[in-house]
Structure formats: C-alpha cells, structure tokens
Image 1 (cartoon, rainbow, N blue to C red):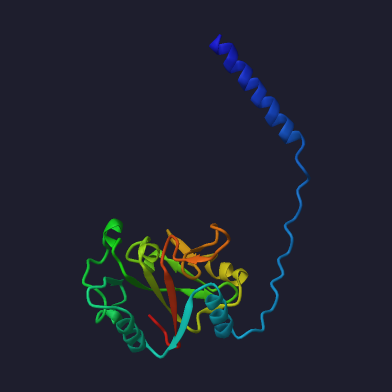
Image 2: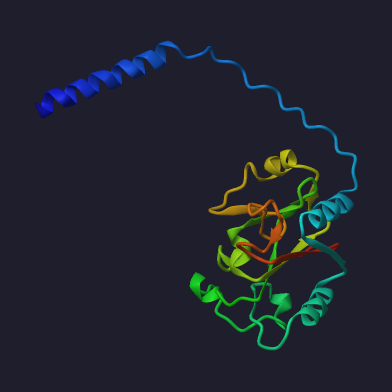
Amino acid sequence: MVRKKQESMSTAREQILNAVRANQPDLKALPEVIIPADNIELQDKFTETLTTIGGKVIKANGYDDVIAYIKSITNTGHRIISSITELSEVISASEASPLPHSLQDTELAIIKAHFGVAENGAVWITENLLSQRVLPFICQHLIVILNADDLVANMHQAYEKIGDEHYGYGTFIAGPSKTADIEQSLVLGAHGSRSMTIFLISLPLD
C-alpha cells in the first residue's frame, strides 16, 4: 500500500515537472542596464538624503574632531565600543572581539565604512571593519567614519564597486532604525540604533 502510494506520488511529480519543462517561455537576452549620468555634488546629496531619513552628517578635519564630539555627547560610565585605534582616548576598555551578548549595554559604537551612496544615504560595511557583526545594530547610538572622497552616486555604482570583492559578511546601513507600521507614524530607533551620525573626513582613513 505504501509502495503504491509512493509510486503514485512519484508519477504525479514527474507529470508536473514534464508539464513545466514543456511550457517554458523562450529565453531572452537580459536588457541592457543604462546607468544615467549623475551630475550632482555627492557630499551635498549624501548629506541631504541621510538627513531626510533621520541621520546626521558632520564634516570634519580629522579624528580630533570626532573625539571632541564624542566627549560632548557622552557621560562618564557610558560604554563606547570601537576598534579604531585613533579613538582610544574615548573608547571603553574591552576585548578585541567581545561576545555578541556582552554588547547589550553599548551606548555608542564607532565604526568605519568603505563608501557611501548619495542617492539613499547608505554606507557599505563588511565584517573586517567590525569587532562583531551585531555591533551597529545593538548599540544605542552609532557613529560611522567615512572618507569624504569615498562616495558614489547610486546603487548601480555601488554594486559595480563591490561586485568583485570577497567578504563573508557585508551590509548597507542607511540612517537609524525606523518603522512606520503603527498608525503610519514614523518612529526612529524602533529596533536598532536610535541615532546615526556620519563623519565625513577629507583625509585617507587607513
């Protein structure tokens, strides 16, 4: 009985697959993707876009400006996590790669980004810039340091830039976490960092 049922199911499966194979549409060449020229000032567009979605952009001359800003927004006892050695003056003493759950009380995380996208205010980050993958999402506030020259106009250019890279983990982050599910009212910091500040620094960061 069981064998007959299995044979019946196998026959039905083959019939369905054969019907699908027999009715496939003709193959067509992929359409050509034409990327429009973006004659925009990338820093201004990036700043405008990120501000619109709840983020903040600060133009700085170097790490000293970042340190001064961090001191102005944090208090003694706040846990500040970063793997950027230039910020050792203000970061909390911690192991290089803490366990994810141990980061639950992180007040401020400071990370670098590879590049930013002007059209949507996103920054591209891979695991080699993070002590833990969860860090940008578990912290209360997030600061990202970005070379002002490392901006592209749109996501077409962004994917061209990362298409040949090799990485185990990568993510685009655009602004603080947000939701408008409840009564269509925008709430920032709903399920991740409550704020996101980008420092645009016109100097190489490596």
